[in-house]
Amino acid sequence: MRNFLITGGAGFIGSNFVRYLLAHYPDYRVIVYDKLTYAGNLTNLADVSHDPRYAFVRGDICDANLVEQTICDYAIDTIVNFAAETHVDRSILNPGAFIQTDVVGTYVLLEAARKHRIERYHQISTDEVYGHIPPGRYATETDPVAPRSPYAASKAGADLLVLAYWTTYGLPVTITRGSNNIGPYQYPEKVVPLFVTNALEGKPLPVYGDGRQMRDYQWVGDHCEAIDLVLHRGQPGEIYNIGSGQEIENLTMVHILLDELGAPTSLIQHVEDRPGHDRRYALDISKIRSLGWEPRHDCEAAIRRTVRWYRENEWWWRPIKEGEFREYYEKMYGNRRKLVIGN
Ligand code: NAD
Ligand code: TYD
Image (cartoon, rainbow, N blue to C red; front, side, top):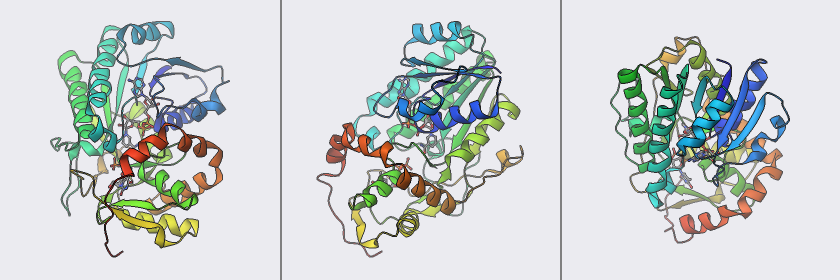
């Protein structure tokens, strides 16, 4: 492994991973390939943009010619695919973009990887492919996928294609399924950055339904370390769950966030729930632990650290909240019914 193609590297997790790779491996070259959708932002990579080991190509993963051209131009031997449409609520508004990028785009990358004999194709997947996990259970890698949102279904479809390329063609693939990531440079449509920035602006925090849904909020840097480990020590053909191993209610997340900010709980506003909202995600992370990895943050530490980053980096998120985001927010929340629920 030497020449990495990081698709979706201008997004949240991808940009954190690019920074991580360049910091830890002096002899790796990192080529970011990204369409720069609303979620892609070269500001996320500003601090590495002058590094001679880094290059950027603007492109769509569905564009087979450009993908192959980039693989040849940079003698790519490893592909890590972060590129995706990633927001459940947007997948409910517009599923087509998810099928196109997450499923068809993954197929295009797999075909290119097969043709150019890539040494490792790594797919960044999500715990959402397992669907709702009933209390008392934890999803293991051998569980069948049972996605319930268009986003989760498109990611599950991609995972199945990746596994089929291992089984059928022997393409050396690995998959990681991460829980909810939080940390620097996350587009403020996702719940934690949305709520922190809303609170800093004195706006309400729109909690879906009763807010008792459970998520495993993990620190993005911990996720990056685990992906690195799977790339170097994981077995081809295998899936690895990655998370903090803990899950908390959304309302607990909100209270920690408000406490870190010193902001009032009166900002909490219960609103009409998301259709098909998965009540609980919970991962069994014993497989990745057996490779020698341990998360460095529990959910609370990850939330508090994330809050501090957004408080100290208003220069990053304020312009984002002015642009496309404003229109999206109006469409998603403008007419949403308010609920009266005790906290
Ligand atoms: P993000 O939305 O912040 O970034 C996605 C990036 O992909 C953007 O830079 C965007 O421009 C790019 N992109 C979108 N469509 C593209 C296309 N057709 N061609 C090329 N580039 C394209 O996403 P993220 O939160 O960083 O997630 C990255 C990956 O991790 C995704 O595959 C996602 O499913 C997975 N994941 C995310 C989380 C999470 O909590 N955010 C958790 C588990 C897994
Ligand atoms: P989100 O960040 O969209 O991630 P995902 O749906 O992929 O887990 O949402 C995390 C949780 O927060 C999820 O249970 C939905 C909830 N949520 C709200 O209560 N209000 C919001 O405005 C958003 C965006 C999410």
